[in-house]
Length: 137
Image (cartoon, rainbow, N blue to C red; front, side, top):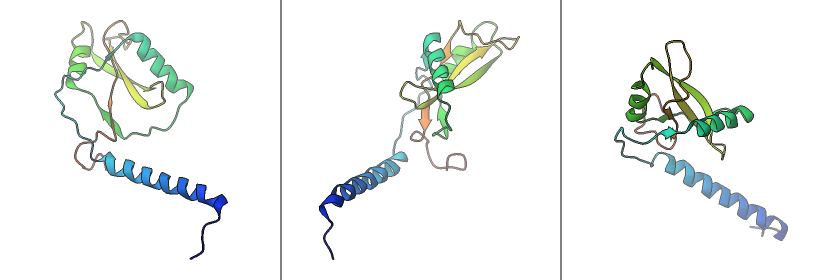
């Protein structure tokens, strides 16, 4: 077998490191587990929510996640607000560009209840996908 020329050794090392990193990420995706209680805190401020929504509008991308988990508690908090008849979601992105969603209550006129409880902090799938099934494969 011929030796790799010195000018290509760096590229080979980088390529191999990239392959190892990719394999580690792929193998770890299905190994992340979480204990869900339904009481995880997803509440954010209006300013945070508006910023995340604007981040997505400024750099819209195809989502890199399949879905996400929100605890029951955030839905209970939003729906318990006087006059709330439903929940609206907005596509959003954190400051690092990772995708998320913002949840806000909706009144009987279809208006966002932006002075009330607003939710975010989704547990993204992957890696938080739970057991493999027809929805997350």
